[in-house]
Length: 100
Image 1 (cartoon, rainbow, N blue to C red):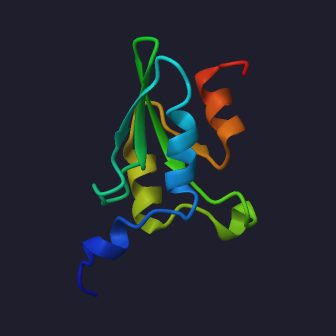
Image 2: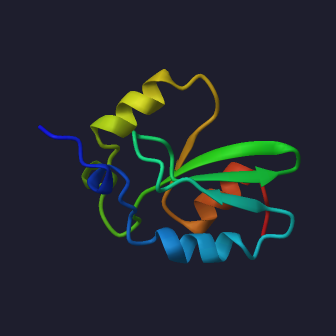
C-alpha cells in the first residue's frame, strides 16, 4: 500500500471548533500539529510551563468507533511522554486541570 500523507494527517470534524474554544482559555497557547502525520497527536498546548499533547477524537460517535488508527496506536505506543485523547472542551479542561 502506498503512503498517503493526506489521509494520514486528516482531522476529526470537531477539530476546528474545539481549537476555537481552547483559544478562549487564558494563558493557553496552541500549536496545531494536525498536518504532521505519522500518528503524531493533533495539537500541542502550552500551559503553566508545560507542553500538553492532545489527540482530538469525535464526541458524536462511540469511542469504539472513533479509536486511534494504526499509525496513532504505533506513535502512542512508542511515546514516553504525556499524551491525552480528548473529545470535548470539558475533556481539555480536565487535562489542563482547570475548573471553568
